[in-house]
Image 1 (cartoon, rainbow, N blue to C red):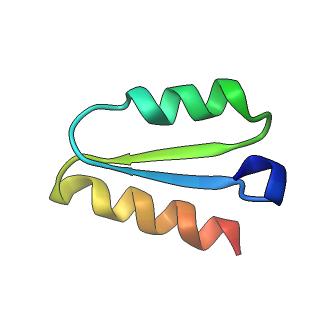
Image 2: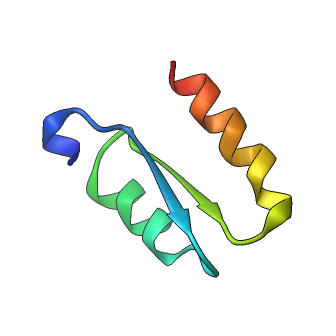
Image 3: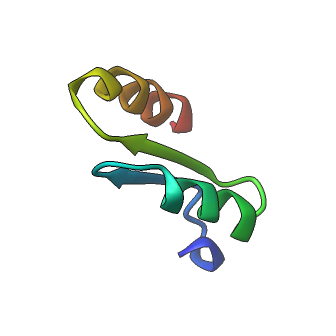
Length: 51
C-alpha cells in the first residue's frame, strides 16, 4: 500500500502492534490505533490532517 502512495493507516481493535510496524516499514507513514471509543477523536484528527 505504501508503494502506491498510502501514508495513513488505521488499526481497528485492541493493541498498537500493527501501527508500530507500519511506521517502521514505510518511511513517513502515520499509523493510528483505534481500540475504543476514546480513540475515535484521535483517528478523526489524523484523517483530517491527511487532507
